[in-house]
Image 1 (cartoon, one colour):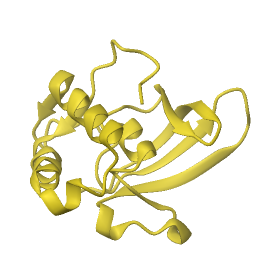
Image 2 (image 1 turned 90 degrees about the vertical axis):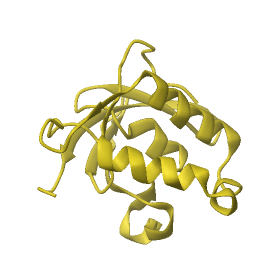
Image 3 (image 1 turned 60 degrees about the horizontal axis):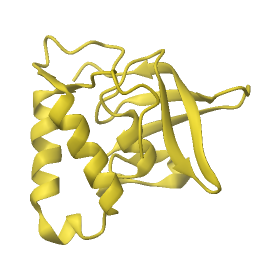
Length: 135
């Protein structure tokens, strides 16, 4: 799994980073995540920037962000919320941060393009809007 631009630096809120790090250290949880998803998230952590809640940009995807994405070269849009794995519910459009789409989006900003695997290959999506509650 890869982002479309290798020079994009993800931005993580310190509290989200700590939650995700703890999630990755729980052996029984990690075994349910695909290795490429885990490696992609770890790679983003290595090149990412950690910031405080006060410094976190409002247009960057984080845990509990509602995100509107648009498939490249199509008008099709979808709105999803990025959540912890135990909160995921596809019927409510709540997507796990450990799913390929969650890993592809977290830490990236409105206007950027990301790619994630779908049936039949990879698709490119543009982050159209990021809605973060004031938490």
